[in-house]
Length: 266
Image 1: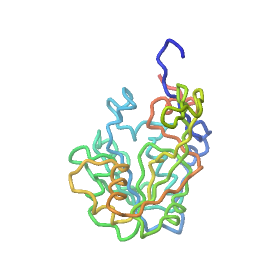
Image 2 (image 1 turned 180 degrees about the vertical axis):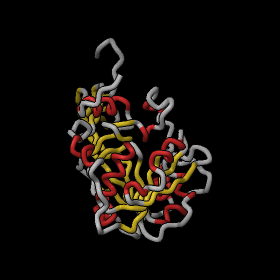
Image 3 (image 1 turned 90 degrees about the horizontal axis):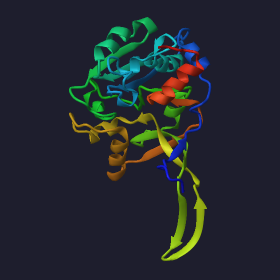
Image 4 (image 1 turned 120 degrees about the vertical axis):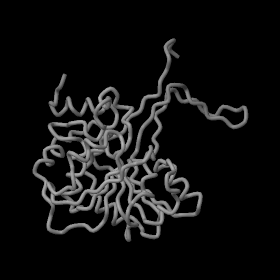
């Protein structure tokens, strides 16, 4: 073992994939003739603490990538798939988001807003929807660039389930030798092994019944809400995805994306 502090390293396949074509589509996206009836709710109210100081005066979803806010790139992919009904849950510098997106008419879609009265996490604002959806709908974080086809997520989702989570594989390297034992008997020792786990991709198909598990005004994140659904006997499904997927809500990844796209700034 080295004298310095050991840290756990990890890798999420897909983080280093070229997404230049996804970004290019933002300026040319058009709503197809076949329009989806399902609602899309974007959780855009966070403080963006992982992105400081970039988010000191700008909300994370409005950070620019090649001339357009990251949130515009995100909804452009959805618009291209026929989704036209959006609700943005907002709080931090929310006026900047509303000023840019307005009611969505520039893209031929409808955008409305939930102004969070206080920090509600990534799940709490579901309780503030003006109208309860009458069919499963999409919930997604506002810092994920992906070419995932959300139509396939809805097709995979079973309406009898409370929620379907999109999941990805992440690989973690343990910085120590891992010992497998039975009682005081050592069965094996593996030096700094790499382990693979499923992680939440921050994108969900949600049945309206999930809203019933939230007390209005409660702060709760989606993983905790899903755990509550499990504990109360609801069915929860997992949809493994291998699509391109980049968490631009992390400053190091955001900067890497800009560098790969040739978007340099002072």
